[in-house]
Length: 310
Ligand SMILES: [Zn+2]
Image (cartoon, rainbow, N blue to C red; front, side, top):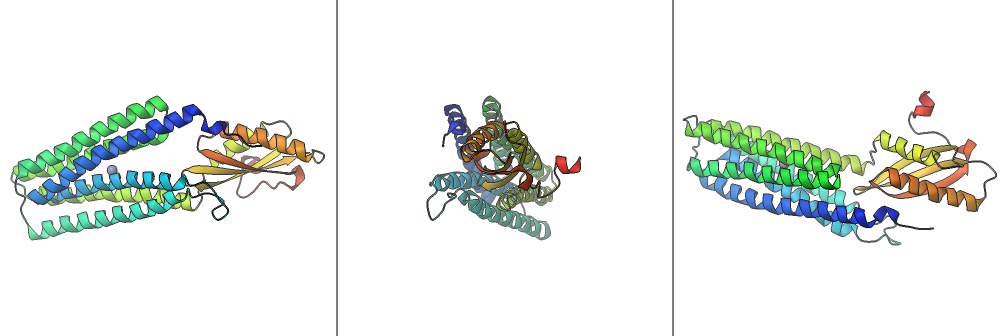
């Protein structure tokens, strides 16, 4: 018994729109980041350098997501029975490495400028670069927010917030250059450190996400929703859910306790209904693995559950 209602035409269309929004945003940020990098080298501004590296790091995150998506479309086979979706997490580890390297580089350059008192030239051109960073990130943030609200995508809305914060980071670089123009040359390296902190923040978020996925960390509330959905099906007396991440989709394992005299055929039918109930409740679930057992043998574990606590 197999069916693919989770992959409805509407879902596919939403995913296509989300991917297009991410691709357009990445292209825009690559352009802004590239120009910023050139202006940073031209003016010697370390704050602008850090901001450019940050924007280019964000672009590499999107590229890794696309590369991961491409590889992960490989179907499961005998050699890789669960498919290749974790390729995305491997790409994520590479991205985390790139981001941490740029944070160290930007911090080191800021420190060097602070102690060497090296100057900043063509300050106006540098300010134009920082303004470009603000504008680029603001445009991208609004675009992602509009699409995110239209297709109701939490991921895209979170991404919009990230871009909005990045505009603040570019604003920090601009502020540093304004201070330089006003006769405070240390404004640039100090802003450089502030921008470095933004990169550290991105590095932390990306690393945390990737590690959590690789370690199969699942929000307990998602498991509870799956268990409630399973128990809403007639015949399921008790249900225990576990989840494993395959890239960005969750494979849910449901152990359902049934009455002793339920036939194999009925157990399979119940499992089919459970699968659809779980898929309907949780967007990120791609597949549900069902195992039917006599209800007394189903142990509600691991970890405390609402039933155990009550
Ligand atoms: Zn960012």
